[in-house]
Length: 490
Image (cartoon, rainbow, N blue to C red; front, side):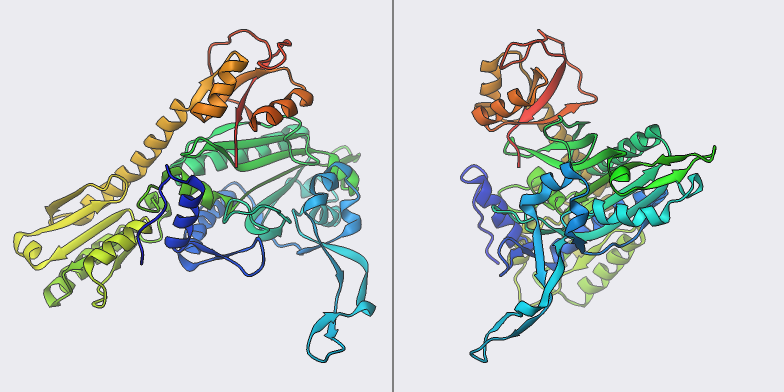
């Protein structure tokens, strides 16, 4: 495989796409705007999915599945919601094809028009809440904690593999509660799970916070978000959790009898992450040699390569090492393909982001050593074969931590507290990263800032403390009470 990729410095967008394709993560589909996730890319997504699923279930959630198609009338029941998604909806109008007059082509059968158009799922609030009205009757049915793993379609005009595609994979949680406080606690709990997953598995630090009214989810009372920073200084929304209030309950008449036998509307949340996390993972850690993966999400954590080719003695030692690694829960691959030279293999596994590479030859066996290379720092050295499994186990922990510390330092260095418009523009246009600025709280000002600089309000962070400064909006000079993280974003 060709190892050459465009450098970040030369063209960050091309660098990203080169890694996606040459690390064998995904390809463009013949369907415009859609992607084919290749086995290696899907293996990473599976590790993300499985860990998140484990954490969801540990907090009492269950998985279910709801239809891909949503009657158009459902979207009309929550005005803000339909307005938020109307321009992105794919609509099914007919249910049959027929052979055309030429006897060769296929055309839509005009007699097979649906009585009501169906929307291909852009998100499932409406059809799920129509279902919940049959599931929820009493306070004994609450809380209802449901998650769905599914695909969704949003008709995007500009697409980029993993980051923004017409069809993508995700999970969407939809919960119902007896009280407002319980629903808010649920929404914040799920955001904490996302943030912890980003930190502990993706090695990606994030800011947790609340979206501005202009940026919140259509139909929500509040949207909570985790915002990450990519190596090019742009932000990426990595996950959201929404407090929906009673909006959908009222739209779909979802009520319950409380303990005093009085009818009440339930309180709701929804929350989700998607294959966009794959894009975040790539752009958080990768370099000009290819993909860099944190060990906890790497499909192959260790690859072993015989030098220059396998023989009986090398095979026996590799089998012993592999067994010891697997006993520790470490995924290992022995690449004993004799048709490919070691140098080519080194380049391939570097491109694919395998965290640790072991190389073993006859001289190593004689010396009782093995060459070990780590993907994150590219450091190589010979170490003793004795207790090699323990050494590798500790090294994987060290690599995971190193990637997180490096990303954390970048986030810290590129979060700038600004108090003037000149400082704000300098961050957005020159330095890159987050500009933490006072804002007067109006959508008008927020939109004007975006039009002037392309920077959007990412969130009002929960746990970012700085000196207060003058409490005036950096654009209008009007009184302000809240600092907001602004950045150019994906």
